[in-house]
Length: 186
Image (cartoon, rainbow, N blue to C red; front, side, top):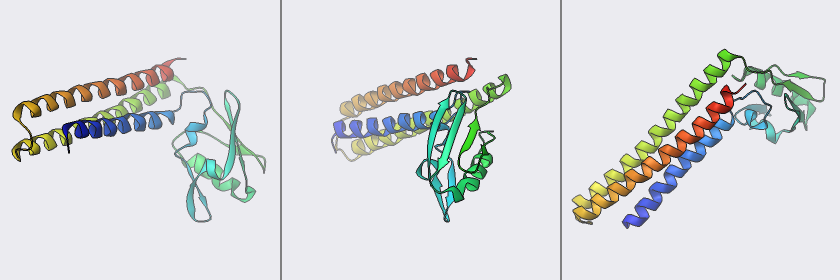
């Protein structure tokens, strides 16, 4: 495998870490109603854990309200139970056909807690990028040891991998900073 292929593969893996951070932070509550809050919640649907959006239609009719209308009304209780069991701190209510979930405004303590959670998720993803860098560096050292590349080529490639790492960690930091500002803004 050429060094260009190695670098392209490393870039692709780091990009996946960035996308995963975006996806994970989309589920963090900001005080406004968002359907992405429910992405991680699964309902027991005939014995199989199924995402809510696959068993019901979901809508945001108001900035502080989410409605969920199951296609099969017999699972309305299971959906309600799953939402209550999640760590979102939401209190759904139903009228037999439709589940209404008011999204309460966040208090200061909860905002700080969510900001700490964002930092923890960010650090996990920074570690993932650093592990990808370590794997790529190990590959380069192995290529040098097997005499598949010169020392100069290895040094250039290691420098390029470090630049990639810095670039992607900066992207992760920017995404987390934007999310933190969104959470802390009243």
